[in-house]
Image: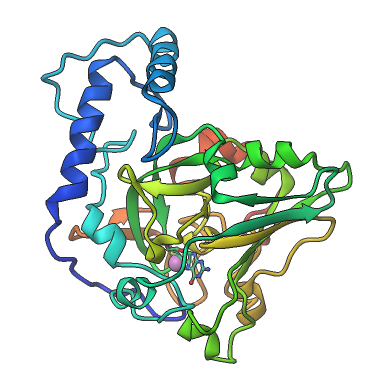
Length: 331
Ligand SMILES: Nc1nc2c(c(=O)[nH]1)N[C@H]1C(S)=C(S)[C@@H](COP(=O)(O)O)O[C@H]1N2
Ligand SMILES: [Mo]
């Protein structure tokens, strides 16, 4: 995070999970499931609803979006803007997860043994029904597949086919109180498993926050998998936030605690470098980082740089949240 943009070439993709994913996508496409705007498809991740449930959901989707695509059509290996999906290999081997290491290509190995079960997410604070969710509880929320761009503040990005469920569903389940203004998230704190947490220079555990309206926006996702596979530790297993219109550091990994609060939470990055990392961290090509430009980005695994889009290309869905704000001041 605190380094200038790095240009690292990612090795060619490991075909397995991707090929399986893409052929499943092709099957789904054949059923006529095509959504405009943000690409998302209701689907069944490994070990979730029964085949009957899947068919039902697909039928509903087909009714809503009756585009018929012949089975010979190539699978949608692109997002709704036409960007190629980042390979599974690159998504899982080029990671930021400072609890393990600052070395993006070293995270996967160091995180491999993170104990993912049992796991609990404690949801509380200003809610009427505080509750501890275990992994089975989280799997019971209707899971959807969503292809999102993720733009790291360092100037690289990925296009990731996540699956998971809207954060709003979880928040509604605990019934927020009227005075809840923000949501605060916390990552596991366990220096025995996370060697990076032995470094005293950072105020562990990693914490992040959203304003209540941001958290309730349908784009805010709690992800439990990608490419049809359960999340791997390096990508924030077993459950992480994904907020695609904000810089990647807002998308906090391996969450154990969610609190609804009245005051704006202080994220780890605000505590470390408040002049560089603000609370909002909305992707904005017009607002440079103090040490580098934010006008372009490199898709991981590809060469050359692309223009960065305002709100990472999600302005139609979220620009209205910021209508009254000067986004150069609230960076
Ligand atoms: N707990 C935790 N969450 C985190 C981070 C981290 O270091 N620790 N890094 C963030 C940053 S800077 C980015 S860009 C994304 C990277 O997600 P990925 O490694 O799955 O691509 O995770 C974010 N979430
Ligand atoms: Mo990042």
